[in-house]
Image (cartoon, rainbow, N blue to C red; front, side):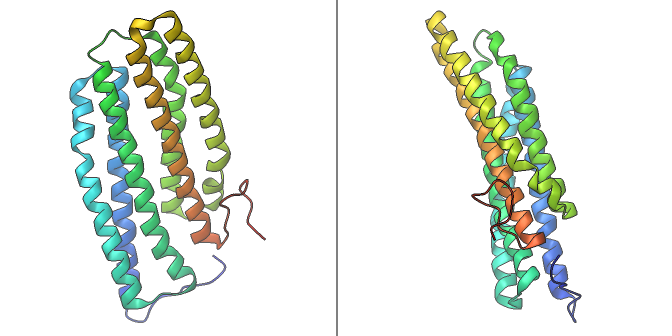
Length: 230
């Protein structure tokens, strides 16, 4: 970090910050589990796994509220500055991005549950690269947050462009398939929505990474190609 935050005399700020980070990481672990259940629910056509992913979202929502409340309390009580302030704000913003990723996992599970009650469309397996990329982006964002790894955080933005491209290609494939198989239009639309949810997961993982770069290096890389704004 450009500045050294050091140890606070009473140590209470450090404890409060660590509690914030622990809750953010707990949210991330629960969200990874939800995403995994939604993924398996789709490809294994498992209605129960989809239902679990949907039900478990409530715990993530509760944690997000807790992080937000605790973050505000830390800001008011300790009035941190410089790197300390950035870490608190990043924890709060990261919890929001994680909660939104969890919401997208729930959206995927809901669409997957509908698809499980219809004949399987072979094109569904073309979503696997998108699931792999979105999942790895989120896992890397969490690891970057846990380790303070700026380089990993920076790597997310270019990968998001690849995910966007996969989304567009899959939508084109489904649109063409709908013309040939109009009876399956609703199923293809569900798949298009799932691809869009994956693309949004990539967006939120990228936002997560941008906040990590700001927290660790005091650099603003939003609206750039990954380089700091001079």
